[in-house]
Amino acid sequence: MPSACRNGCFNLRMSRIASLPLFHQIAGQQVLVLGDGPAAEPKRRLVERAGGVIVEDFARAVDEGVRLAFIAFEDASACEVAAINARCAGMLVNVVDRPELCDFTTPSILDRDPLLVAIGTGGASAGLAKHVRLRLERVLPETLGALAKALEAARPVLRRRFPEGPDRRRAVDAALREGGPLDPLDLQAFEKVAAWAEGSGLAPASGTELIVLTSPDPEDLTLRQARLLGEADVLLIYGMVPPAILARARADAERRVFHVEQGLPEQGLPEGGKQGSGGGLEGAEPGSSAGKEGSNPGLTVVLHWQRN
Image 1 (cartoon, rainbow, N blue to C red):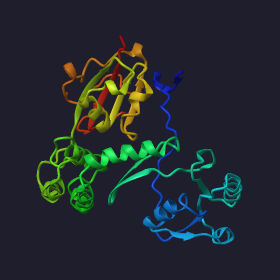
Image 2 (cartoon, one colour; image 1 turned 180 degrees about the horizontal axis):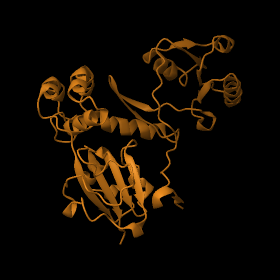
Image 3 (cartoon, rainbow, N blue to C red; image 1 turned 135 degrees about the vertical axis):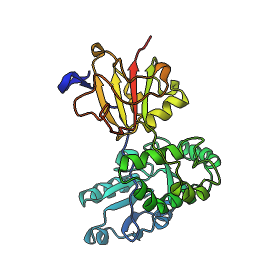
């Protein structure tokens, strides 16, 4: 059930994820790897590939404050004992093929250095994660890494042109969207970054968009609606919008949630979902950037839950 909050709005529960994806930098750091044979060797290669230093002695690992441990004994009881001991020593533990004993799991990795795509199932099926990766390998070009490096090199130019972080992010979003000047699937996109960053076509996206939702399934979103959710700076939420839909929006987007009886704002909404001015939104909570004179609130998306 929704919980009440100030100014007459209410909070919606977020959809849950099975685990928290993190990229752990271990270059130059020691990592404990226990076990021999075909289960342990891939973990050793993974640690070495990430620049880690392998430690194979448990007592040494404890003395030297090692924080990560991979355990791959063939004997199940030995794995359980080692996992308990390592965890008691303050280590985060991964036990091969024993997700119930793991503090973390290792994903299937698609490498477009420095861009990494990690696909995980929380230990449910490594095979499934692998085959999803293999499909993506055929789709995502090898030049993605070069594009990432070119964007990194363009940061000083973008900071100079757009001192405000939100404006800078919106400009990059507009360039990287499907069909944009830096479309990630364009094999030559990395060659265009410098000219794009110095050019005049960097106006960040802004305005107001209305999305009327009639299905709780995010797969029913149109491509355009999914893109708008991913780029929105502000979400105005009317009705019990399903958490699965909200999970498709940017995590750092400002969210304003309203009771259905408050009604949709009469001004500032585009007809038929077309882009509007982005100003004059009624019903917005005090302090919202929407509708402020001379402000640039970026892209505002109004989500209206209207299930048939």
